[in-house]
Length: 501
Image (cartoon, rainbow, N blue to C red; front, side, top):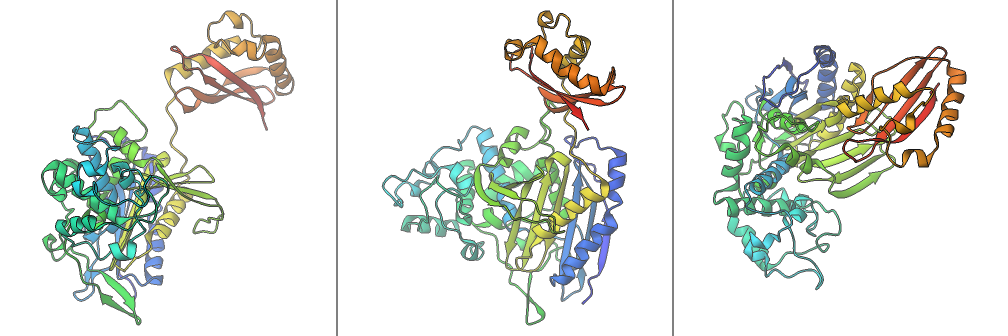
């Protein structure tokens, strides 16, 4: 069956955390839409997806979205960016954000023992006599010592609170002691949902709806599938015996905190945009459900997962990849220094993934309604393709006033270094590390080949206190790197010159 494809261009005005985007940059990204459509269409057909929806978030806005195939086969209902898919474990970071919202209210601490909030954990037997108590942070980072439980956990969505407490009271089988290693456990996030309910005094679903979804304007995201408009609800399928077979949808329950959310590309893009808004750090007014620093904390690599030295991008480009887990989020960094943050989702009938590249200011979301549809592969391919076709580069770091000031002061001293020791711009280590005469000889040797200095380029910052610029010379270019000390005002503690070939 050939997929029926429809595409939508979206320019959604999001909240005040939206970043100002370059029109030229956006135009280049929009021009990739036909390629994006083809990549998703081909992937859906190859892997027998009944339906698929996708969206690309750039600088705080959903700028491209589209869909192919059907959200329900029996009625030939076409999938769209408004279709409501169950997103499985993509739910985990939302639960983690709920925990941080409670911390913001002063109602818990991440290193508190979890038994402070689920008393039944207090008497639960440990794996060893020296095992520490499970903390909230252990649960957030898959470090509680529970076994990997995807096959079992996938069938627990509609479990009741009392069943979770009964499981704890009976005693849990541990694979490791808490705090020593990563092992993916849906059970831990079910416990986090229970903690949210116990601490907030209301069902975790209600708390998250009120504290996270409402401020973000996520009006279509739900937990219980019977609340979805029939025309928008995506039904789940497995592909078996060369036909699609519908999977039974599970009702909401205690384990929904690990994988029960139902949402659309249009709605979830607002959550993705909020995660992007945490970068770069700024002094803008806080408008989100938690602090931007909380979001960055969620995204950090708290628990090492793996090193894949032989990783290859979908196009075949080899590039080693290291992976870790944050708070309900997966973190990765490749051999090129590209950082990705997001999460996959998989349940009977569904597969999904979202990912942001903070340094590029872009994020991607894709939902499909086939069991365990592997969306990470195609999303990675699409992001890689967009970056290549649009010629995207990491967003530049704003040059701080102190970097600009020290650069201008340094240029005035070059090439003679006259009165450098009395200039007041160098840290106390600078000249003891290398004398003025040695530094002058080093630069003179470079200038002998590059010629007379005629000007300089703007600073390119690595951070607030480190960066590079180049000296333009009559016969060449000299690269200048310097880094400043932690003093206030910051002084030059390291300075290096090198020829640009």
